[in-house]
Amino acid sequence: AGVCGVLLTQAPMAAHLLEIDASEAQLNPQTLSFQDFGSSGGAGASSASPSATAGGMGGAIGSGMLKPQSLEQMQDVEGQPGSSGFWTLRYYQPLFDIDTIQVLNRIKGSLLPRPRGVFFDLISANPDLWGPFWIATTLIFAMAVTGNLSSYYAYTGPAGGWTYNFNQLTLAGSVIYSYVTLLPLLLWAALRYYEAQKRLVDIICIYGYTLGVFVPVSILCVLPSEPLRWLLVLAGGGVSALFLLSNFHAHLSDCFPYGEGDAKRKMATLLGGMAACHLVLLLLFKLYFFHYA
Image (tube, rainbow, N blue to C red; front, top):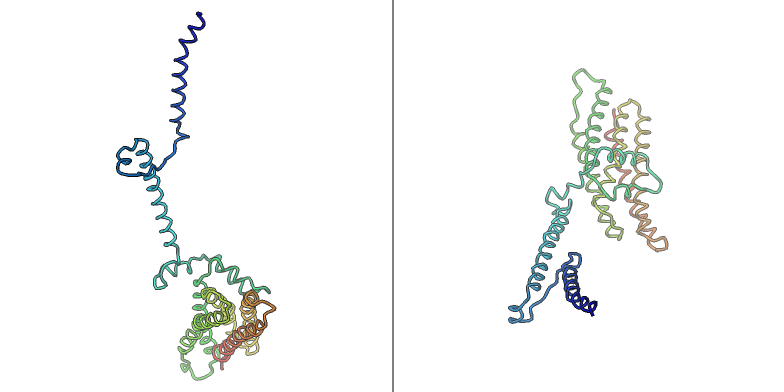
């Protein structure tokens, strides 16, 4: 009987301990979560429990924390370089975001063309206009200076009769800048017409680096030897043509399936037009800029 009395006395205490454990389990932070208790009416909203109110506040806080992040992500996407309008300087900023090592590697790739033509793969992630601009500008001044220098050395008239030919600088600027801007624009339009699209910046980039070989050629053409000048111009034209045509041939081979009936005709038209324009450039170089009486 004494044992039964002790058990009956301790039973309420055990029950009370169980209730405390249960309440502590409910208050465990790992088991807490925000819940949204939507209001079903005016009465339901006025009689909402504190837990429901806390849940609504928690949902509002949670959504408020997400909104700034979403807006920030949207601003990051909108603020990416090149995403602005083409009339702004920010649009062209990525095209000049390149270091000297990358420019030198691309110049080396244009001087040592590969058979498959991997230059487009090299510039696909980061095409630039910095290298083409400075290559074209350097070539313009190199052709004007070396042309007048060779003309001065070859002059045999009376003393003081030689004059600097400024027309060479003007014509060189017109020819070179047209070659790296207008011709890529025409080629870009032709590629779109034949459904072999290529980004205009990629075409301008490869045309700019194509002229890199003519910078040392123009300097070496100062040497007073007509056969040597022809050899230098033809060698530079062959290297640049191989570099240009091999890259576009690889691109067109991917765009035009081998079994397509008009594939060969399209490739021949595009590559033939590019080769003809390049040949005209070589003849202009030799007969006007690198020809010294």
